[in-house]
Image 1 (cartoon, rainbow, N blue to C red):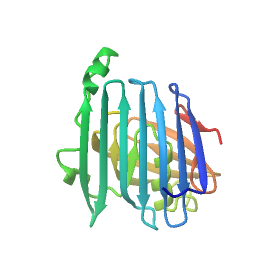
Image 2 (cartoon, one colour):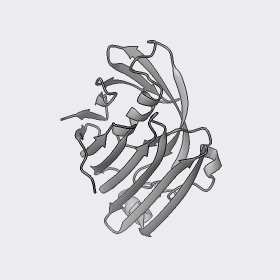
Image 3 (cartoon, one colour):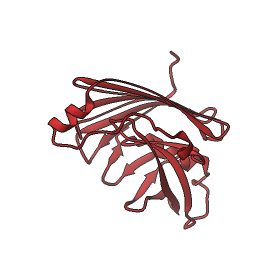
Image 4 (cartoon, rainbow, N blue to C red):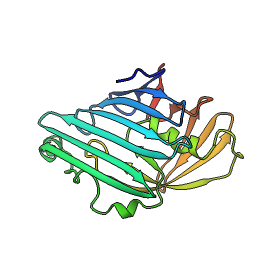
Length: 207
């Protein structure tokens, strides 16, 4: 396994949790990371992802694991269509029910064609994956105030269910980019490489 030249470590502010990513931005993005949190149940999430040189997502390989259960997901984008491979062990629904939460959907998606037109992967709870559309759309140098609407393959964690989601990114200038959905909005502070240093209500970059 090759070593990677840069490290990013975020601390969650909405729950007890962290994310640590090792990244290489020489030709797009290659990253390996781990995220851990206690909500909705205590879990560890490991991921590996690759974009093309233009920062369009090429593939992501994700695994989640907790007491009595484990799930894996691989998403691959080729010729505009997503291929989905999944596996699961144990009973995540039982763990969620015991913690007072609703059950989870199955990992992956029954209809990958619903993801057609999505060129970015958004891993729920991962701060790193916000950088993918920021870099792909060139938002660091884009005209402030112009909204960019996009469709993403949203990977729910810890279930690894994949759903299509509509998102809006709007550069505001001064290293700030507004991220929004139909029901949510946050002004992200980013560094010169497009990595998020502050995500209000979710996480901050520690180092």
